[in-house]
Image (cartoon, rainbow, N blue to C red; front, top):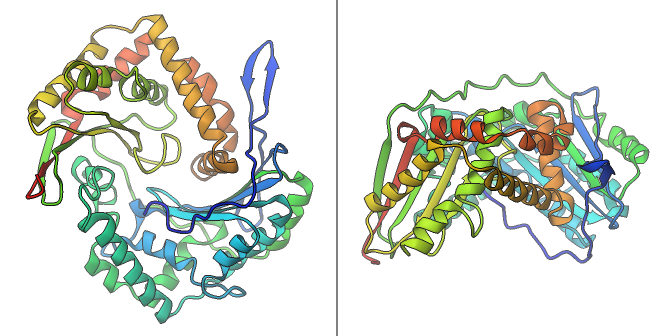
Length: 455
């Protein structure tokens, strides 16, 4: 569901830094070359010659949000299947190929995509393009591999959720309480019975339907020449056959008009925990960017307003976490309905009602009057700092993640270069209006974890 266990320590150093240009005023620019192969594969190239490395990422437009009914956890199960061998690479040989060449690899399943990436020395780009195209062209799907990975995923569920204090809190549990549409509200990790029910035929149909070029985006970031990369991509991915892109299910979420509250006892927990969530504006709208700034003002950093109240003023908790698409990505790498979530682990002496009362008071103040210009300007600086860090993180993967998301969901990876302007347009009035509309009590879901015998 989150990152699998294939991360290794890289044998090379270096990082990718974005090119920035100054034209009168500071302008943050990421180089983007975008095209589509005849088979429908979207390709994004973003060269960066500051280090002799490349990050290659393949994103498939299938996540746990849109997996088949009665097959909960299937999208995640399939992520594991992609490492079980292909036409020319045997079981686990893909992993060894990357590691033996001094590289790093990983994969994950998220709301609206499953991704796979490798970070390798730049001269190994062709090798990785061949390997990714090889498993896109034909996965080794058989009964032995399926049964093996069913066991692995079931073990992962037991370790990460069922036998873990606060397992699944709140990233797995909150969507099930806050959302109404089954696609947004089911158990993404998967019911053990559903995982057992998956068949080889299910896997083959899933691969044929969702792992086709027309349902994917390929991104290359790092030290390479564009024209050479184009030739290599056409050579290895061009011949991969494609089918028509699958019709996506309706994932729309009805407006929430009444506050929701749920609680559960966790026998392994030793302290209470609390999470709150709100449905956010549609991705890419002016209100969406305003919500991103509200997140910075309320939840992110030492100067966050909720931290001032809950940590510094009352001392009920040592810290808060959360955000838009909390724990499963960022505010850009999804498509469809989403939640802004905050959560904390707190002292036994304080009750959930006290905490929520304080949270509600802070949110009410945000809607009562426009913030002053200095506060708004500070939030914009924090947002940009976070965004720039995102685009330069982990040897180019941060940039690749954004470019792949904008290609898959918007058919326009150059949107990465408009975020600065969209944030700058947010006014204090729009910020206030967004707080009034989206941080209202009737849009709130609260999840309370009560400690069990471990308290």
